Amino acid sequence: EVQLVESGGGLVQPGRSLKLSCAASGFTFSDYYMAWVRQAPTKGLEWVASISYDGGSTYYRDSVKGRFTISRDNAKSSLYLQMDSLRSEDTATYYCTTGGNWGQGVMVTVSS
Amino acid sequence: DIQMTQSPSLLSASVGDRVTINCKASQNINKYLNWYQQKLGEAPKLLIYNTNNLQTGIPSRFSGSGSGTDYTLTISSLQPEDFGTYFCFQHNSWPLTFGSGTKLEIK
Image 1 (tube, each protein chain N blue to C red):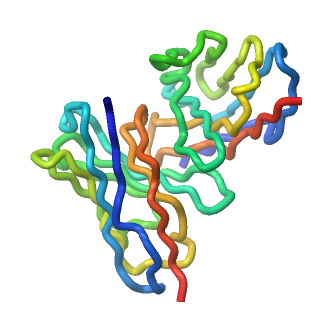
Image 2 (image 1 turned 120 degrees about the vertical axis):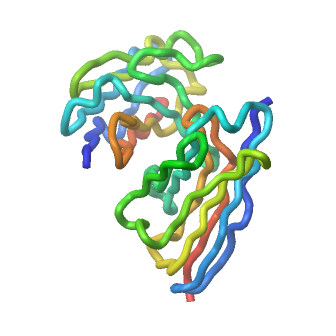
């Protein structure tokens, strides 16, 4: 069974950092591009970042470019999102996804 | 950036109805269009990928069509469990973008 389990969310002050993790199982992790998608409370879905099979290519939406870093460890079947210089508008549930499979999401709240 | 304009934003229909949801891209997305269903408090679920491919385990009453800039999700006979919000998603070019969603209510 495919599983994606996010962790690392929480309440953080503006300007601080947080690192999200996603543990994957039930499929060959290195065969998939991976992505982070977020959803602010009561809002729609917003793509955040993607990473290629081997991590050699990364892609970001403009609003997080230079602040967020997506990475992966294929040996550990894990995906990461390092979030720096957090802003209130980054408050959302963050999902780890292959596109076809999604984690349950982890909540990030940026507030003083 | 490719803008995805989804319509309608709210849809109320009865069990057994045929329902269509539309998505228009601001430029050609070469059929790289997925449809997701999301229920309150849950992660999105992939229904259709690359315009017209039914994801494994999804009922055949769901279908997708389209090309170029115009795409449609059709539910042939609405069931009570089909309530939720539907999103289109283009993965033709970066940045990837979602439609704003269609909330489907069952009358």
